[in-house]
Amino acid sequence: MFKPYQPVAPGPRRESYPGEGADGHVENERAKLLATLLNSCAAGMFTAWVVAPGAAFLYGATSGNGMRAFLLGVPIGISGAFMLHAAARMILGGLRE
Image (tube, rainbow, N blue to C red; front, top):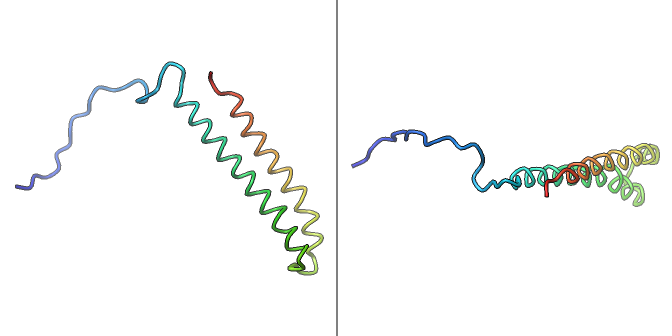
C-alpha cells in the first residue's frame, strides 16, 4: 500500500564536507572552478570585443563607424580580458598544497 512521504530525522551534523581532508581538497576545487569561470569569461570578452569586430571589419560587414568602433573596442576588450585572466591566476596562486 502507498505510504505518504515521512520526513526522516536529521543525522548528526558534520563539521566538514564529505571527502574533505585536512589539506582542504574541497576549497582547492572550488577555487579552481572559480578560476576556470573567470578565464572563460576572459576568453569570451576577448572574442566578443576583439576577434568578432576585427573579422567584421576585415570582411566589410560593418557600418560607416566600423573602424572607430573597432579601434575603441580593442583596448577595452584586451584590457578587460587581461584583468579577468590575472584575477584567475591570483586565485590559483592561493591554492593549498
